[in-house]
Length: 107
Ligand code: FES
Image (cartoon, rainbow, N blue to C red):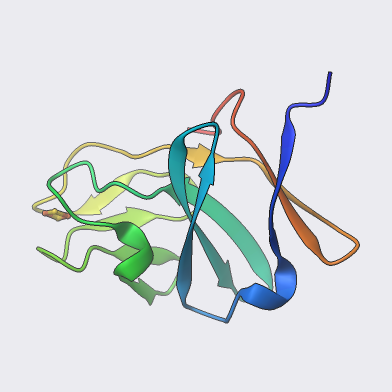
């Protein structure tokens, strides 16, 4: 059984901008940064904010509410007031589609 989910067209992604997708009832944010696509929990671990509405700073996402930051590679909270990590999910690109697996997070 395949646990990969086709969540978006790669063409839907714009450099340094997030979009929200839902996989198995779970909301994720996709970001395309320097040619790499990342899938991260959309809910900030600090409060009621959606990370898809945040800003990309290098390879981190800055929360739009209190400007906490998370690594897009590890999910680690890198700047306060965020202090709890968020989950990062495996992504693969195939034939112009973005596939995400939510079986086991990378973080
Ligand atoms: Fe994201 Fe506070 S809600 S840093």
